[in-house]
Length: 145
Ligand code: FES
Figure 1 (tube, rainbow, N blue to C red):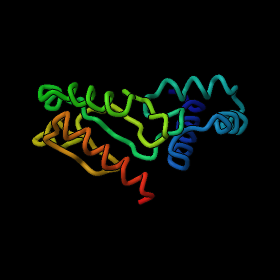
Figure 2 (figure 1 turned 90 degrees about the vertical axis):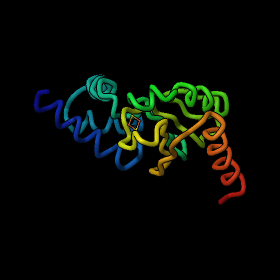
Figure 3 (figure 1 turned 120 degrees about the vertical axis):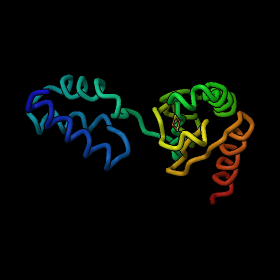
């Protein structure tokens, strides 16, 4: 990584911290600030998987696909969430309530399979339990809680 790329990366990191993702206008702002083309900034943003280019849903679901979770059927949890919310890795539900991201080990393998929603870990999941958790969150949101 050269100097200009690393300074673009740090501006992208700051932007993501501020907005939770990288809005398009910020790509142009960073390009202007660094004297590089917007295409170059976009290239850096898409190269690193840490950067999110679309606005995440209100609730970020991190579904672990690490080894322990994988052998304990994380894919059945992914399928259940897809069935319940209609979304898969990197996607946001139409109502803007949920975004799912598949991640590597969340550090609580003894509870596998695990997902984390807004920083709270839910372990020993079954497809039914995973659906129920997101249903509850959706119901709470509908009540305006
Ligand atoms: S592999 Fe899923 S929490 Fe470690």
